[in-house]
Image 1: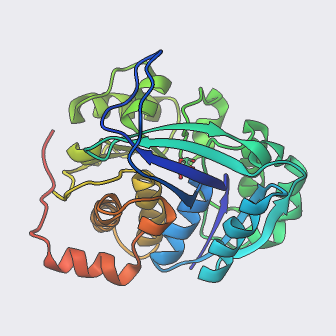
Image 2: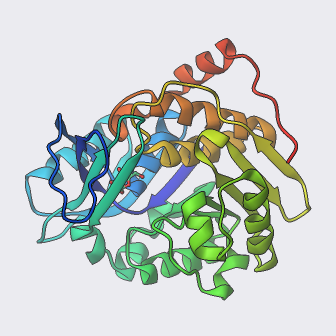
Length: 311
Ligand code: RIB
């Protein structure tokens, strides 16, 4: 079971505040930490910890963060031969966390923005033979397009997480096996204000009508909804946990889902991914908070069954 990820690698500067600042407001934060993150790297690690062999393609800078970012992935056993070093700063994410674990994130892309189509071509060998290719929106869109075309040629199904939200060119939808997005991204892309499972279902229908094969929309504590082109719908409420930091919950969900879907059915994969995300939000930080396969299975074994719901 091998998964390829092309995407961002960031150092997250995370600080806790008692509320998010208003324009013109100066706030004092309580504690600040540096955590390896980036949506691409987080999803790579999540898939690896959930049980897959993973190859990561991305770029870090020529700074002191780069070594930490690369070694964090490499020490886990992720293939980083496709991670380039560029003569600039590594990607940075400035993250604030409020008392209920919600976050705001500002990205400075740094080296992620210098990833090129040639990097994708050069990584062909590590992408070839993968069961999934995972993409997000923290690298240049032209690189994602090259990756989608290469995946088409190699017959590799693509999961796109359009985060941050970006209007996807219409011709791309039919080339995606699965689109995974949160309520904010679904709202931005479809124009449908998504705040409930019913809204999410409308947004998912909109994306299927545009050509997407399957759409999975995550709704935080309200859970996740999955719509297939066949019309099959799954709605799973989130597992109730005490959230301290939601950073990387979506990435954890996607990495775990990708792994589980290789051997389980849609419903089991949704449960596995939801359990992984639930564990992630109970701990601070991005990559440090991503659970391993054994923890996810143990959590599922000890959690009251969270039933699929009607919308
Ligand atoms: O999805 C969470 C991630 O978004 C953080 O780790 C941060 O780096 C940003 O990319």
